[in-house]
Image: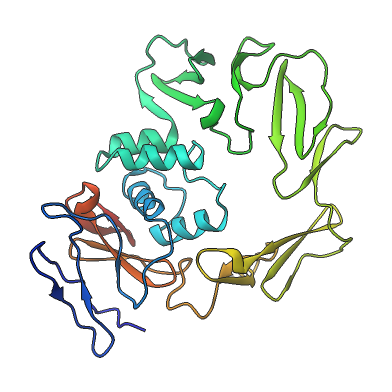
Length: 326
């Protein structure tokens, strides 16, 4: 494992500068194209990162700019979003939010808008009334405008693509698939279908299955009967409604195993889940992100360094124990 004191060398495009960490390594080339900086993470370990560099960049921007970041560190943001590709770090769907955040560069005002959906100025939208604006639901409160996308960029990741902005029975807009007066067929394959506020809503059950019930359609696990959640090697088994729902931890980009992510909390009663493998050089859930000059040091199972200036920022700082680009 590399010593934490190892520093990432800088280089120009006409030369490679060697950075030595004892007998471990090697040489890094930080400039991909002459005259430009790369936003790709630089290895502090012997192997390249398998994590999507666009996800890393989005997590750095979110942690650096958001007033109330979803995660407590860049490392946690990366872990949580690669563990569940549908889990989102903003109010938008994964692809839309990642694109929006990264297009903002070092503009924290725009990053915050991407992260929350809110921006200053209501642009004629009535206060506390949801209205349709093209394919988005617009809502104004305290002179701030919130936009939620429907269709292919649905803000709620579990809503199937293809929704549009519709006006419900109470006069407020929402994303849906048509108007209704009575509940439609409750299940369409693995999709739960409901009539809410006069609008048809379709929600994917994901790894679960849709089942009709007297109270309406519900998403349920249809695995073998069970009584408790547990680990079976690297498989996390959650007992949902008396049936098993299995998750294979070894399928994740960052090597993982089954366990509890409670860590130091003795009162935690969370179900088994996929957690970072103990064989990793560092743990993304407990890693203390830090700064090394202009580089933000994070963990994706191996310590990595990302130059803050490559993302449009001018410095790396640590405030209240949280490393961020500024």
